[in-house]
Length: 119
View 1 (tube, rainbow, N blue to C red):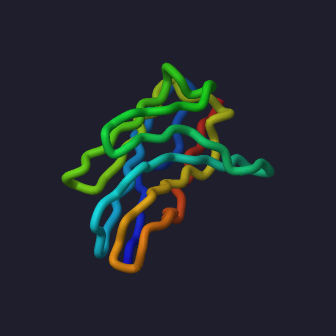
View 2: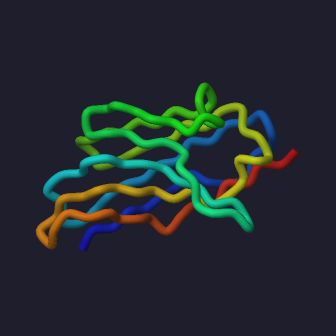
């Protein structure tokens, strides 16, 4: 059974940094695109950044220049380095991956990790 597990969230002051990790485990043939999404209180889930298996990245405009997405394919792990954090970055950050597994190919989601940025 495939699982995605996020870690690295927490409480940080505005201007600070955090690094999130997301590791996929289970019976996996390959991982295609991966991405980070976030959901602020009372708002819809939104895209933060995505990365292909070849390392091509895409960012939401408000994260460009502050966040960096990366992945280690050998470890089935994706990272999100978040710098210059702002209070509006507060929310639950979710990992997403499009995974080819024995049961088929589909999207998987992690359980989320809380990021809180204080002013």
